[in-house]
Length: 325
Image (cartoon, rainbow, N blue to C red; front, side):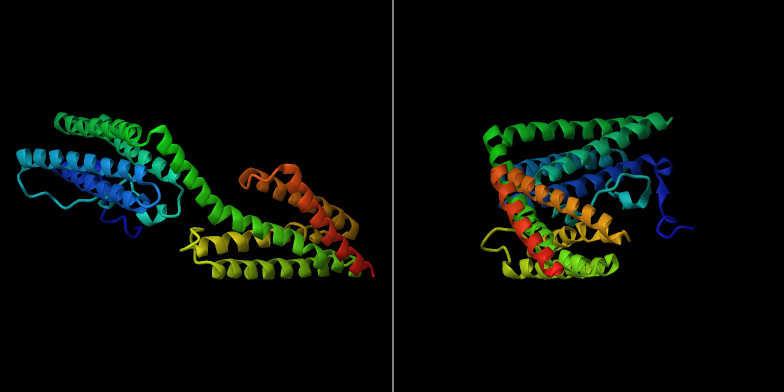
């Protein structure tokens, strides 16, 4: 028997009182989640925080009506049953899993929460033959569908075109500061700085295995160094560049990727085949860097291409000359 599933009940085995109790606890949970979203976004995105506060109030209103219905039909004692007690019931992601998501992703997550609930109640209503249970589930499905419509109304009321544009611009800026800038710096460092040792080793030894080992060591070493340097250089509190851990991960991973790109071809035993492929990979890496600069940093493409191509060519030439000498 699978641990954790032995004590779960099937939704079809729940009584009407238990279904109603499950709906009440689910509304309570969703209200807490929306308030957590609002608190997370309040400082940087006040308009979106107001949307989630409004959605939490809607959940509170539905919860109160469901409690009143329970009191009328079953009395004041509500059975303790939650979504994790029911097999197949829709789940909710922990709030901490959304803390690293962008603003638009959090909005989508909230919309999906409401759609999941409405879809589940509709399906459950169609599956039951009991008239009372079917009516109850239909009411719950209608209530959840109303949540989706109300959320759209709150978005329209609190997020006018100006406020939405401002928040989207702030979210884009934060994404660039936290992920793109350190990742781009890492990719440039990994792609350019490892050219000299890799190609110097390649032309000096003409041994693909040795060249690969040097490239692997240089890439991983540079990635670790860049990651720790980025994380330690700025805690983000004053600069607003975001979590040092995120920036360190972005810089470290992209540095390693940039170096490994032209080290991996030396897994090919034939020296000249591996070298030609490595040169092609370098060309692709440098143009990718120019594209990222143009796409996210608004650097004119020709200027970015000139900078990275000239810099890369100089480093490559230095490595080749040293290795040939």
